Length: 415
Ligand SMILES: Cc1ncc(COP(=O)(O)O)c(C=O)c1O
Image 1: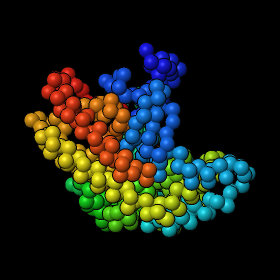
Image 2: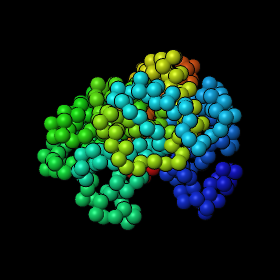
Image 3: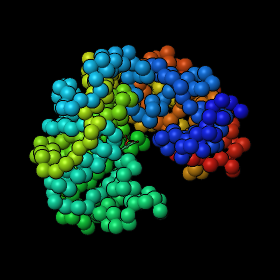
Image 4: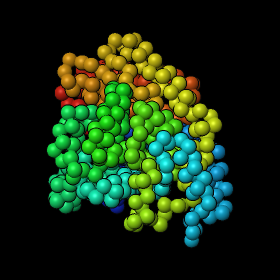
């Protein structure tokens, strides 16, 4: 048994899931191949407890935009640490960060900080309800664990059943369902909250632009959950990339290179409802994360980080195309260059999922920390991408063979 196996066994006895974030639980089907713990990161690389090195395309589930232990960000955090972490009044650097977000995010007339993605989303739906005086919401996509977003999650998950009456679910991309539900619930709806892009092959932005038009027509607020897309797809997130002007939007993952900070932003007339009620938490102005976010956003602007993410992602996609050609598998590079993937086609509808799953397994073996979507950071340079492609090539060849052998037993399963 490896030290990490022993430690994980004990973790499972003390910590439900053995981890604080469900998506970070090792897949049982990848036991002995996928690392159970990560002890260190630098740039685009990670090291596990046994000292194995990985090129990482998961980036802590999205927050790491510049790279692990990025010196300029960490120096800013250390400088702030010398002054303090949290004070008895606001810190002046909160305004410095608000100014930066205001400059970068199209609808950010006013900005407030929180800690997590779901904090930002919850705050936005409170603002939407308070502003409109309506109680129902329509939602598309994952917005976090809180009750309002988990009404359909699973039975006996602790969410009061009455909440279902106030939350209706929209499948992503389904404009007809959106129109039907908006018509049906019309004046009871405070907002539609949606992820602007679901990281799939439809990169057009048509769905979110359609929702913008529809919500305006019915006087319903459009709340964008940019927790995963913000500061990743473009400096101004999906709002900038797709040309959408949301009423309110929530940001978190990519804002502070991994430090815990989120922001909810929007047009002044909505954000000013915050003067009427309490939406507050003690740690929202925690200064280390604010200093990290200021450094991160300044670097993004100064170095045109997003052009680099697009270039490296394009290099990866071109490499994917060459790999599938060489191996002779039916696959097409898909998604946006900042988070691409390969869409496989095969003899049955489950083929893509099976092959992708087995490819991920073989990628871990090669020392590539995988993800269904390959997130790129500023620390992924051309040599890292080329090294990753070489390993991905070997991994896919093995996965294609394994798919034939394991077709009847493999059960693709993502947490
Ligand atoms: C689109 C989206 N919204 C909200 C969340 C929740 O964010 P957090 O885990 O920071 O609360 C996530 C997390 O994965 C997300 O991807």
